[in-house]
Structure formats: C-alpha cells, structure tokens
Length: 289
Ligand SMILES: NC(=O)c1ccc[n+]([C@@H]2O[C@H](COP(=O)([O-])OP(=O)(O)OC[C@H]3O[C@@H](n4cnc5c(N)ncnc54)[C@H](OP(=O)(O)O)[C@@H]3O)[C@@H](O)[C@H]2O)c1
Image 1: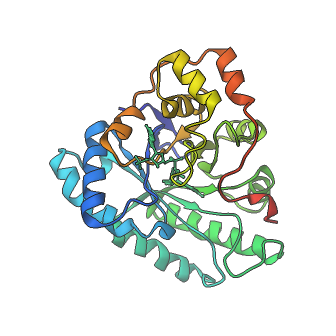
Image 2: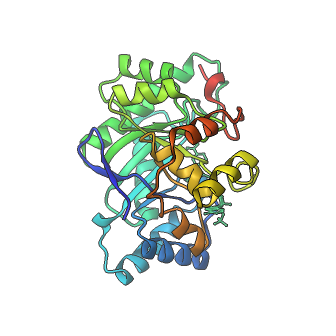
Image 3: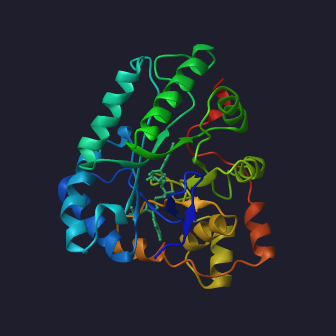
C-alpha cells in the first residue's frame, strides 16, 4: 500500500495514486479500477474534462465491494476549469453536485481548480483573477460545508499561489503540476513545502501520447544501472523529493510496476536525471496573469 501524507486539512492522502485521463467506457474502467484496487491503489485522479467521472463512479460501486473496501478507504480527486459560465455560488454548487452524482458519493476528498486561467477570457485579462478567486471562495464554502474535504489547485505558479494567499482565507492543500526530469521547478517545490501545500506531479511518465521520456537514453541508462524500469525511475525520482505521483496506467503490469518504488536513487544518478534538459509537455501556466 502506498505511503500517506497528511494534508494541511488533517486528511491523509496516498503519495501514489492512479491518473485516469483516457480511462473511460464501462468495461475498460471496471477492469482498470478492479486491477488498481487489487494492486493497492487507493487514490484516483479524475476531472470534469476527462468525461469519465460517471464510469469511475459505477466502477467504484462494483469494485469496492468486490475488494471488501468502503468509500472511506479510497481518495477521490476531481477538478474543473473556471469559466465565465460560472458566476454565482449556485453555479459552482451545481458543478460540485454533478461530480458527486457522477461519482456516486456524498463527499469528494479533493477538488482542484484545474487551471489558473478561465474559459471564455484571454489569459491576460484582469478579470481572470476575479473569476479565479471567486471560484476558490466558492470551493472554500463547500469545504466548510463538508461536501469537499480538501481543496487544491493545479498548474499554479508561485505568483498565482501568493495572490490567492493575499486575497483568500483558505490555503490550498495541494498543487498538481507537470513534474518530471524535463520539467520541474525546485523553487515552486520549496514554496509549497514552506506553505504546507503538497506538490503532486502529473505526466510523470511523459504523457500517454508521447513515449520519448520513458524511452530517453539517460533514463534508460539509470534504469539499467538500478535494475528497474524507466517508469519506476521516473516515479521514484519524484517521490524522493516528497512529490506525490498519479501515473496513469491501464495494464496490470504497468499498475503493479508503478507501485513498486521501494528503492534508492543515489545522488549522482539523481543529478544525472536533473540535468537531462528542459521540455514542457502539457499546459504552460506562465502565460496566465
Ligand atoms: N492537472 C492537470 O492539468 C493534468 C494534466 C495532465 C494529466 N493530469 C493527471 O495526471 C495523470 C497522469 O498523467 P498522463 O495521463 O499525462 O500520463 P503519464 O502518467 O505521464 O503516462 C501515462 C502513459 O504511461 C504508460 N505507462 C504507465 N506505466 C507504465 C510502465 N510501468 N511502463 C511503461 N509504460 C507505462 C501508460 O500506458 P498504459 O495506459 O498502456 O498502461 C500511458 O501510456 C493523468 O491521467 C491525469 O489524471 C493532470
């Protein structure tokens, strides 16, 4: 079972979870959730935009019972992108209710603002800040009401977090960002640690659409030296810096591989991985005001 971290809300979160982007359809989702629970996964990361909350909710209903587990035994994270379509607290309430209904649960463990920007506005518009903070204040209310146990953000830079801290009462419990040897920000990690925010990596394995990170010659050399898979090396590299991970995997072998991370990476090999170069594979938040 994955090691846990205590969030600034007092709730525990597993350091290893399952990313579920592209996992959808009844049979496929049932199979992956079944195998993931069997392999020890207790955290599932989804989002409105993955269009799979409904499949996951149905799979949890069937598979938790099969594995003799209860709702409280798993941690469910979902997220949404702020939009000009959401203006009032009631709009946000509907959004949260929709996720609760899809996932067939009466509380969410974590809800994230998926992105510091806002659908319907240019990234440079000053209104982005107002919408972002209003979305956060609404989430803070739902947290107070117990609909969501912990709230967090995703793709936030230090300046987005600083602004939020100045204007809003609740500090995020977690910041989920792209984080792998080609894209990492040690200042952000340090800032998060100092402010009690857990940094959680996404696309640790270089995304589903691109195998170049998993096949990178430097990662392959390190993996060979440690007698591990390249995926295990990439994941352990994050955990060794206290960064939580949510690799997406759908085959049994991958699911099991990604849970077996109890090994060390010596400093010289950590340095080698740190110096592979730079490449961002997903969203770039630097453009967002
Ligand atoms: N907040 C955000 O903006 C954001 C953005 C992107 C992603 N995310 C979250 O982060 C999760 C992970 O990121 P990601 O989906 O971009 O992909 P990823 O975890 O970087 O990579 C997934 C790919 O790696 C393969 N894989 C997994 N384990 C492997 C292993 N042991 N050996 C070889 N290949 C392996 C998977 O194959 P199989 O599926 O065939 O097993 C899949 O093709 C997402 O699912 C999502 O939950 C969040």
